[in-house]
Image 1: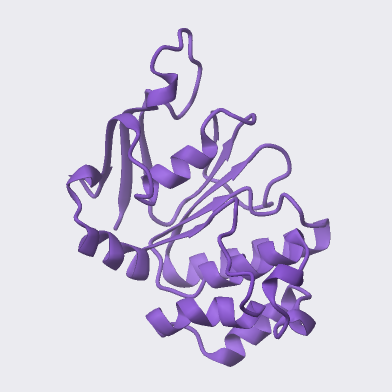
Image 2 (image 1 turned 90 degrees about the vertical axis):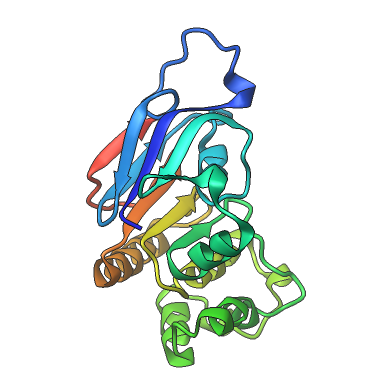
Amino acid sequence: MNTIHLQHTLPQVFADCNGLTSDVWHRDLVFEKGKYYLVEAASGTGKSSLCSYLYGYRDDYQGIICFDGRNIRSLHKDKWTCLRRTSLSILFQGLRLFPELTALENVQLKNRLTGYKKKKDLLTMFDALNIADKADEPVGRLSFGQQQRVAFVRSLCQPIDFILLDEPISHLDEANATVMARLLTEEATRQGAGIISTSIGKHLEMDYYNTLKL
C-alpha cells in the first residue's frame, strides 16, 4: 500500500457541527508511504476515531477513505485480515493486551501469526525499553506505561506499509519515549513505511513530514 486518501471524511457524530476547523476532517488529504505524520488534537476531536477508521475497526464516518485508490468500504474481511498481517499495524490507545498472558506471550501471539521477528529481536527491544525484567510477568500486573511498551513491541512484529500510533507515549518518561522513537524510526526506515501518530500533548520526537491539527 502506497497511499491512504481521505476525501471529505468526517465522523458521523460531527455531522451537525458548524464551523469545524481541521486539517484532517472534511478535507482532501493523502498520507504517503515512507513519510511521517503527526496528528495533534484536543481530547474528543476524533483522533482515536481516525485510527479506528484507517484500521477498518469502525466505519461510522461520512466521506471516503481509499487505500491506493480503492474505497475501503469495499474491502472484505479476508482482505482486512491480509492488510493487518502484511501492511497495516496499529498501537491502540487502549492497548488491547491480554492481562492474563505475560508480556512476551502477548507479543509472541502476534509474532506467531506473522513470523516476522526472531525471539532474540523481541527481547532486544524489551531490553532497550527497560522491560526485559517484565517479559515473564502477566501484563495485568504491569503499569500502564510498561504495558504501552509491550504493545509497541507487538506493533512492530509484522511487515508494515503504514503504522498507526494513538497517543503512544502518554504514560512514558522522556528516556523511554526517546528509545521508542528510535526503534520506530529504524523499523520504518528498514521497511520504507509511513507513520501516522496522534497526540493530545507530548509526542514522539521524529522528523515529521507534516503536522496536522484536528
